[in-house]
Image (cartoon, rainbow, N blue to C red):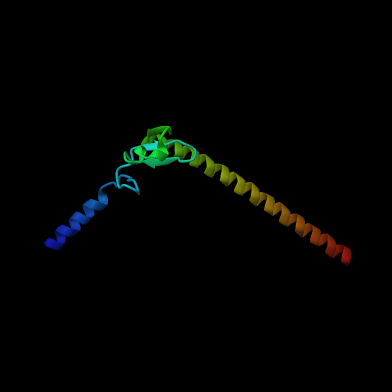
Length: 108
């Protein structure tokens, strides 16, 4: 019976959505620092630290949503560059193969 209660408690804890918390203070993340040199989620204690003085702070949800959009755009751009590089690499490989075939034909 005691073991069954422990298992039920463990399952209940697993089902509860974990809210993100501050790595430094263990407090809930409430704000997002938009300063270019920072761009970090903050708890109430972090926002009082001197290093964030004068920084533009927004609600956590707003800041992280914007950060996710920027990240998505960067990932899409990265995928385009990767695709272009792959196409360029194939073209280079075809050019090298063609050049090797020409040299082989000249040698004969």
